[in-house]
Amino acid sequence: MIVVSLLPKWWHVATVNARKKNRIMAQSAITVRIDSGMKSQFDKLCEEFGMSANTAFNIFVNAVVRTRGIPFSIRAARAEAPSALDLFMQQRRVAEASQEPEMTLEEINAEIRASRNERHGGGTFRSDK
Image (cartoon, rainbow, N blue to C red; front, side, top):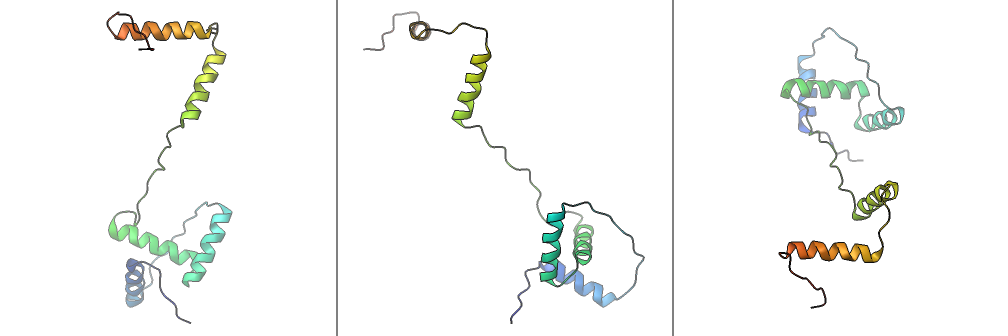
């Protein structure tokens, strides 16, 4: 059986340095609240790596202190633009909630013609040209 380390280089350096120094330092406890399902997955992965969750946290803390930063990028999820259908349905709900009377097709076409005439300098605009 061949075991390939998937851990980053900084983990190996931190582990070797800790073993070389082999010194005992004062210990402090940290309590972390985490989703139980996520903790279970984390524990299983740590076991696959051959370490405890406690060791993994210590490695993380050492990397943060050593690099003075989080050893991975943190980004907010990109907000998705609403779809055309979502925008249409939103506008439809606004129109349905409105107290304005509904327009007939002829009234809508008259407004469109008036808008086109206004854009073209007040002249007559015919769409059938």
